[in-house]
Amino acid sequence: MEQNAIHASLAAYIDRLAPELTMLSDDLFDHPEIGYQEFYARDILTKYLRDDCFEVETPYAGLDTAFRAVWRGGEGGPNVGLLCEYDALPMGHGCAHHLQGPSCIGAALALKDVLAGVPCTVEVVGTPAEEIEDGGKTRMLTGGAFRHHDVALMMHGGNSCTTDVKSMALLEYRVTYRGVAAHVAIAPEKGCSALEALMLVSSGMAYLRGHALDDTRMSMIIEEGGTTVNAVVERAVAHIELRSYSRAYLDLLAERMKKILDGAALMTETTYDIVTIGEMQSKTPVLTLNEMLMRNAERIGARQIEPPRKKTGATDFAVVMNMVPGSCIRTAFVPSGTSSHSQAYLDAGKSADAHRALCEAAKILAMTSADLICEPENLHAVKEDFLHARERAKTNWDD
Ligand SMILES: [Zn+2]
Ligand SMILES: [Zn+2]
Image (tube, rainbow, N blue to C red):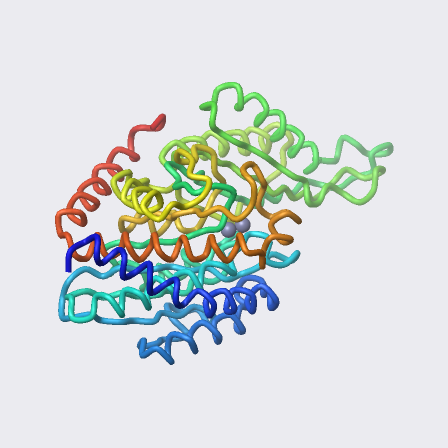
């Protein structure tokens, strides 16, 4: 079949399936579950895929609420992973993750219908707990997921139809200083203040900001800073977060941070220990893959098309994007500029716009997967681009 005909068949299939996909996403919206508790979501998504003859494995890659559902068109050929999140926030589905599973299912079922017999494997992969500090995808990677995909694709509901060219890498620490308690009036000379150590850390960070790259973010909160004002503080605890668009640069910054922590301990005669409590990679953007997604977005007349996002937060999808070529297509269901994790996202969760964004993304994912499966030169170009981008990211901080 010629590529235009394939695209048309995929889109028509998804249009026919739309009522079921939107019912599924409304059901997920009405049953929000936070990270690692997404049993309802896992069950309804895997049931749908199993009923459509996908081979389902759950728990998967070491996580109870993760799954994968596999369909093979014919022996060999590329393996495309369609990754979906379904965790909610404590407020409910304020990040629109309820759209992802149904969208990926729509794409996968359409590919199964249209590409029967074509050598390829399509996997829908359920990835729990994106919103939690140690995101599910990082754990799943350790559990053996993702490495075998030739390409990993995602969708995310948003305020425009676009892709990302960056995401922030992140390091999070918990630092505990220990000093010596003493009465502040009677024997202050005997005390060493753990709180003062943290104050010096805060000053050190403020000065470091003046020498860090513009896109760097450093923040600290004090979780424990003493309980009584008449005693030298024996124990103080801080939560520190460092972010940069370059993971390589973040490692350098972490070394300087360590010197600040050492210096504060030295000045106050305290000791400290440091525990890493979160770590995220920056994305390796594959521009050729982004362009393929956006060409298909234009082809289907997706709404609110905008240039790639340059400012983004951190996501556990980045860890996958450092392993295999990947990209996420965002489709619009709220007005331009609307922030995620907001009441506006919740209010629009079951709207006609949300349903349409889900179907737009399903079509874009299906068409792009078909472009990669049916035209080997596309997959080759994406892989080359990925390897170059990953190499460049090791040394080039300003990209
Ligand atoms: Zn979110
Ligand atoms: Zn999200």
